[in-house]
Length: 268
Image 1 (tube, helix red, strand yellow):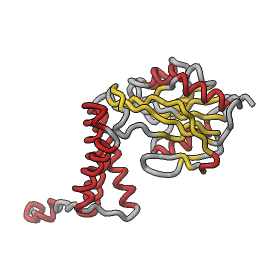
Image 2 (cartoon, helix red, strand yellow):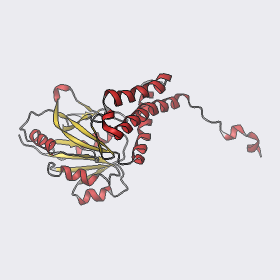
Image 3 (cartoon, one colour):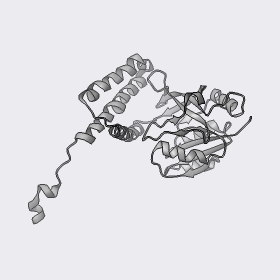
């Protein structure tokens, strides 16, 4: 049975990406819903010019933000696309078949990604992941978490599409460093909440093993210099810095309060 589709684009300060994302889904979507969390760079002006419907709310974490936005879609099928992602014609055809009832209908569908780092495609460096992005509104939700949000769906209710989303993450190092400074803190907080502590092995050995896994076993070396950088960055930020921040939470020594250290100045 034919139905309609809302494309949901969560974003904040995505002036560089939003137009390209919207244009890639315009032929597929019956509605484009931009969920914004405080853009100040002209993102919303672009969204209005392109005819998107806009909703706004303060950002707490990705799971809560998307769980708030999804019920506001006008149509029963919702495709979640980040602003730095692009639709491909092959994937669009598969999605049409699902929405129009020409393919088996599940509650959610996993979609693969083709990852790009500063415009360079990465085929082997560990960025070709998948996520559940096409869902039936009201059937599934995101699990609570500070980062790396995932749809809570059982295998028997999930399908898998063959087409891929193009993911153009990080156009500059400034952008990467800003985001991962934030992500490593949130990741460390998640570990802290689970009672984990940083150790000698987690700070020294685990980052090296992560790099070797991505660069040698996963074949990141085949991606040339972009692959080398991504494997190094992943080992450093996703592993070492997250563990270092966890160590900071348990073991960093705060400086003495100036008033306690120099009582004579307070008396004077």
